[in-house]
Length: 319
Image 1 (cartoon, rainbow, N blue to C red):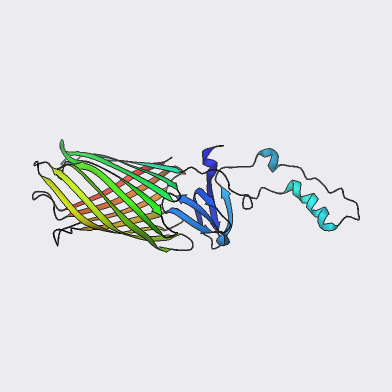
Image 2: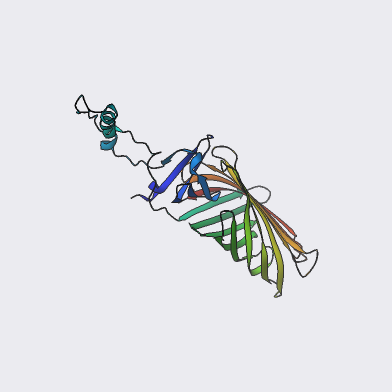
């Protein structure tokens, strides 16, 4: 079976719809894995119909001839009607169970290229990769971000970051997680850094039509940076995060993340990370993405700006 036949679109009675990979299905709800909202539980009572994205019916089945009933005149009318209509029942994807084994992996790669030839020539190239593995009760999220740029032949951007987050679902709304990450940033004079920490998350709000999701997380973060002046900086922080995802229009989606890291050793020292992503699909696999990231670190080296604002426009490929 083609792997993309496992994708499905769920139509809700209020007119909205949700598309993704079917993870599981019970009498009360259908669970999907979506690229934007993560794992989504749709109550069966709110579903008006469902359909697979790829065509399941063969031409011979769709064009099956009408077979007339051959029962005697004394046969019950209801029985004759069933015999007549069963062979020609149209392809009703709503009534068909979606029992195929879903693909647990989802991948997306974004490419961006910014060129400017003016008073100062500037070139910047960036690649963003994201992979998600979802199989209840676990969910793994892998992120890699690389960018390199030059202004008049001098590096103006050279950074690589990567992280992995593993979530374990405790209930429909509560989960625990472990987060690890690392990378480097030449411009901010960080030769290398790594961090890790556990935490607890809770889904505060998930609207019935899944047009808006709000999660909150709290945990601990240990970070160590190796700076270009051969010094090492170690930070113990709390991690408080708010995560939002919503559907603006039928296709336009957005998500946002706010992460605050107050230093537990030095009162008044902290890190702040803001991220906002907007995505508009051009096809099933291609999308236009607009990303804004703002990083603020009170412990940045003296000759490095505390604030780092990044604005990106990319072309995304999903597979």
